[in-house]
Image 1 (cartoon, one colour):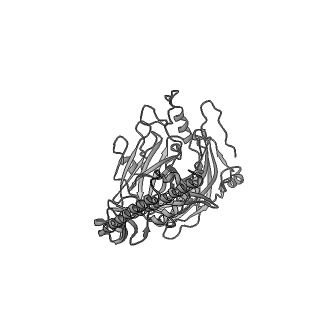
Image 2 (cartoon, helix red, strand yellow):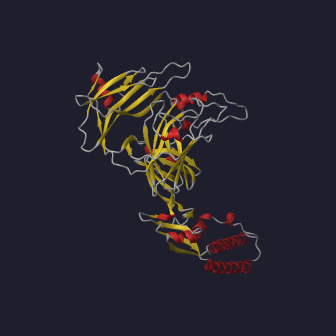
Image 3 (spheres, helix red, strand yellow):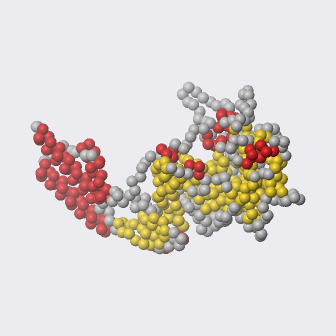
Amino acid sequence: MNARDERGTMMRKHARAVACLILAALGASCTVYKIKEMDAKTLAAKGRKAAILSVKTTTESINFLDNDPAKLKGDGVVGNVHGELDIDPYDIAELIPAGKRAKVVLKEGTRVEVISSQRAVDGLKCQVVWPTWIPLNEVVQAKVRTVNTAASVLSTLGGVVLFVGALALDAALYGDDEEVDPDETFSGSLIAPVMDSLLGTGAGNPKLPRSLDALSSLKGETNTAEETEFWIMEWTPVSAEPGEDGKFRVRLENGSGVPRGVDEAKLVVVDHPSGLVVAPDIRGGMGAFSNPVTPSAATDGDGRDITRLVRDKDGDFWRSPGGDSAADPKTRPRDEITLEFSRPKGARRAKLVVNATNSAWPAEFAREVQALPGVETKDQKIPPIYQEGEYTKLRVKILTAFGWQTGQVIFAGGPLPAEDMIYNIDLDDVGAGKIWLKLEPPAGYWLIDRLALDFSEDAPIEGVELDAEAVDSPDSVEVLCALAVEDGSTLFLEESGTQSLLTFTAPPLKEGMERTLFLRTVSCYEMPPRAGAPSPALRH
């Protein structure tokens, strides 16, 4: 066969490949759809297998992509809302790899799956998916896509006739050449526009970059066991009663058992309506709750009822049975707490009120765990008991329409006094009626006094930050300057029991309000050295 014949044969093969692929696409596109609008009652009766393209409630309209429609599941509509989100890396509470995506939990409670991310001047620009659940009783109207069966049959028959005719025509024109493999002889870049135009998958869908480099670069490697300092922002409640001269005198002390350096200390004064409880939140600001709902049931990993222990803020703590600060390899390394809460109708967000502490500093606990004896052979290396992140935070899992998901994380604060902290949780993809939470703390590491949910609306909370005007120290000027700004100039409280007395002048209480005060400090605690190592000194 000469070159011209070979070229002709290849052209015929390519032509047949194009014809086959286009006609196959026609066959695939023979399904005919109908778009209908349904109310909630009709959707429940006839929409079980329908693809839901949009939902309208009394408060919002939610659209879903044609190639990622929502569906009816149980008593609600379940789907993914696609969009863009600007993320400040500081706001990320948890980052969990999930195949080609990443699950991100933000400190303010939002949970998304990141499809792609790009660095921007002020953070990250991300293409994200919001998992969503919409109660059926809140649906006013839904736009659904269903199959037009009769039209699809006729269209398919027409496609088959056209396809068979094309094959017959090809055989008549070109004879019996060998079988053509379209994957080997045809470039996908050529057929793609044809397929896109036939199947409707081209310009109508967003072309998303697949790189998660910008996001995954934030997940730096850490080694908690090697840390020599533990930095934390503390909010210590202060009595709201001033002295006879109208001034507030607050003790700044060290009861930790390790050297403490204080980089900043301010009195935060909050005047608020009666009935609100003010507490710090995960973002370093303040929030409020008014009617915390206690769990209707709480059990540990052995099925024991621990509701009494985690229901009230009473100083009676739950801790893994028999757990020490280091997990015993002969026992279960993690415990489990499962909590059940009643969910008010229409509640889309909740504030998790946590009162908890740790039995050891994160670095101490990590060292003790690493020092445990393990079984290791030449062929098998035993993986660590805990992931690195478990030394510094505790995942709060929530049961959603998509299964158990990480809804928030509680950050470890070391063996410091337990105080209330507010963590926001998104309930957009959580079914109606009940809320189920699950915690899996390392054995003996977490001590929990109270876990509660508050569903009240966020109240505007404004605090006044005050600098100390006096301190009982011979170096008062230097000490006051050191405590005024977080700049590395530190007041050292070297030994346990060391204290200083700070004096503040607060503005008058606002009429009709109640007052809550905190001593907010930025502190650095010196970690105990490893066995046999010299004690490191704080240097700033």
